[in-house]
Structure formats: structure tokens, C-alpha cells
Length: 166
Image (cartoon, rainbow, N blue to C red; front, side, top):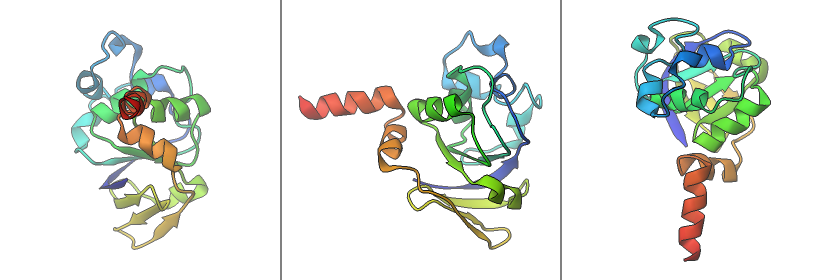
């Protein structure tokens, strides 16, 4: 997957309550959830973003509960990929299962500033900072996880596989 957008820098240990507060868990609609994305951290955060923008987080992004609403809200906000130093493990797997791509950059994530223009190639594991000219490299997203995400998540992937067998 290729993505290009503005970086929205976040801190360490951003939990799922910050990503999507519990008050909004009555909905499963991605657009509705996306309109409240990051309200637990910064009310109105969504007003600063545009479709295609990228979240750049610190350590342990997505910690807390295992709610699947969190990655759905990020996708609903128009953010196709999150780059971070590290991710909470359950959030990591839930994200791909829901169709959200994550890339773990370790300490290299510190070299991205809020507002930098990024170009991301998940197949190559490359994050180009078009603002600074720096290229950051990490492990590529495994092919099978990219297939899951491009199918809109695990449910879409299973439907595709079953249709191929029919």
C-alpha cells in the first residue's frame, strides 16, 4: 500500500479511550466513529485532519482495552496508516483485522515532526519524510497482513477467500 499525507504527531501510551471515548461505543459506523476520533486526547482533533493524513505516535500506541472501535474510528477519520515507535499487541492485531495498517518504526519515529509531509510504502517498509528529505526504513508489512487490510479487514478477507473457492 502507498500512502501520502500530513503527519499528526501523538505522544506515548495513547490508550483506546483517548482514541475513541466510551461514550461513542454505541455506534459501529466508521464515519460516525471517525468524527469523534482522538476526542479523548484533544476535542476537535478531527478538524485538523484530511483524508490520507497519517498518525505518528510514540510508544505503546493503542494500549488499554481491546475495543475494535479504536482502529475503526481511525479509518473512519480517513487515516489509512499509523506509524509509531511501538504498538500495544492486542491493538496491533485488532487494527489489521479491521483493515488499518500499522508500521512500527522504533526510535526513528522521533525524527518525524507534526505537520511533516510523509510518503509511505508498506510493501517496502519505507517512510519518506518529504519535508526533511529523510528516508526511514523498517520491516515491510507482511504480505498476508496487507491482503487482510486491503480487503477491509479479516471478515472481508475471509469472504474473498470463500468466494474464490466457490
